[in-house]
Length: 360
Image (cartoon, rainbow, N blue to C red; front, side, top):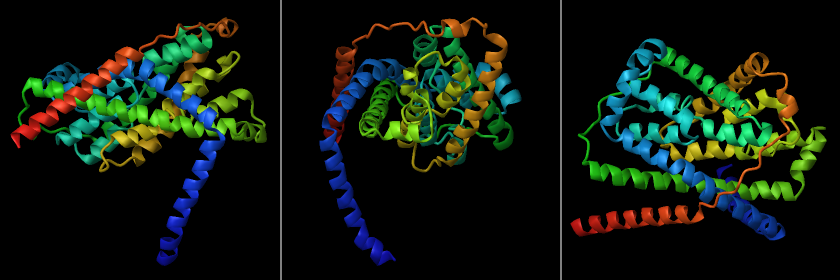
């Protein structure tokens, strides 16, 4: 069997390369358009919205200020959630900032020796969320013309994560230890935080661009449409299917999908395959991803239930009538500032490399 696999592996790799070359040649226009759109989305949306909070999270986790800032949360975290206040603070920050931020903060603590591999794997389950800005704009205004709909999805997804965090704290009792070494000078911490945020954004944007290629091929070849037609699904079902791959596609829902608000909350809570791959790339390989994957299914179901309760008890009956009045957003061009930011990170990295060469 091993000899057979040894013979077939190169053949399979060669076949995959040939097939990939044929597919990229056949759908070159669609792929180029999708990659261009993904790059613009990274430069205009992802980097401006996530870089600052990513750099700040790296700065917090590598400085003693983080422990001091988390102390006021001790009564709630210790006696209700049974979590250390630092981990409780990371859970709160990750649910209002962006999907990969919580993973980045937990991995920084793991590398510094403040949290062990087991606890980091469990905390990944609840430190995962898009934040209210994404839900209010991409869902509330873009789909329903009402910010409250987006905030309902945010409350549902964050509420599911908080319930998951309470379960983890009560059952598994995560712990946090003192840092292995004394904090480094503030100037060095700031430089390392900026460089770390740059590497994180590079990973996130790389996956967004890479994931746009198979998505474009599936849509251009008609496979997505045929799959929905085979199951007798509507056009919005195809949008939900694409959203399980790339969550930003959720804003393409048509009509007035007010009745599907709980399903939107469930999909947003899971985050999509592209975001899950980002989490997998940003985590340390020692940290298991199995608890996180299981928790996404559980949190998706919890988000569905919470959003259904909110929809039943807190939304007016008139909302479906105005749900079709979608707001038109002005496209903001942040390409030049994002490019300048990338160049600054490259210069900082070059300066750090040259300083190391001089010492050697």
